[in-house]
Image 1: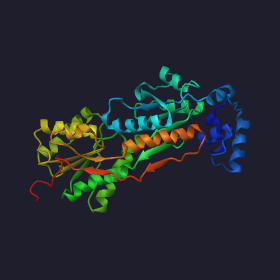
Image 2: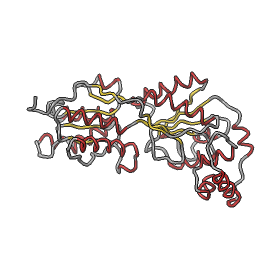
Image 3: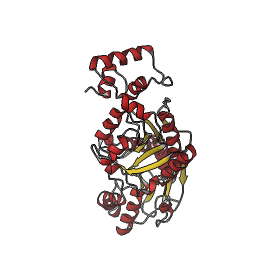
Image 4: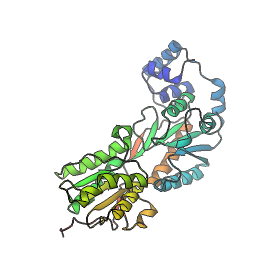
Length: 346
């Protein structure tokens, strides 16, 4: 059987456009030329819409699925609060799942894709999400919204202004007088994670704007233990030996990773912020409980979740929703105890 993706590829459009054409949506802007190309592609590849499934989709369940990486990730707490608040306001019930369990052919995926089970899905993508799942979702025509992933051109997404947030973190360190600033955290290689690439570019931009040289990223996973290991093996020896390339400050691209960095610095006998300033990206309650208390950049995670539900609701109704970066809410620096001027500088 021909698939929705084959139609989209043949017509030179995205799968949501084909899906909108098949639904007869009048809210999705589509030129007559595009409609003709989609119609021709459907005929050429022999695509047959599942009319029974389409009929079932018109019956709303008022249930949305939310899939996030690691349900215990404290950095996602505010986003989930925004999701739950918006869902309550719009009359939805939330079904929460872990991305690690969402694999092609899994029971969770079949429940999500079973027509009539949920009205739509919000996904906070991670490296653990099976890429075949994306194709499965697209093929079934399930309304999907991604949060914080600008690389998915066939889906609608909403994202934080990561570049602005990391620029703020880096600029804070520069304002304190630091010139040797490292960037730690993220997936390797950088192209494998769009958010890591964007955050690193924010770091590079902030340094170049002030005439300073950026450094290659120190890659690690996002968990505290990943930050601990990366710092212990790649940063601590340089700082302890007072090498010329030793950083005096560190931008960590995830607050949970940064807690591992603080622990590793303590175990290595490196004073924070005496010998090394550390700023973490995103903010959690645990950041103020760390010792020293962690300086962070607070991002509009609540608004991301809240607007995500509103956007998904519009998609479910057949409305056209544009992918967007939440650039209208500025990041906020939360100054705590882990950053200070370099040693020897007033």
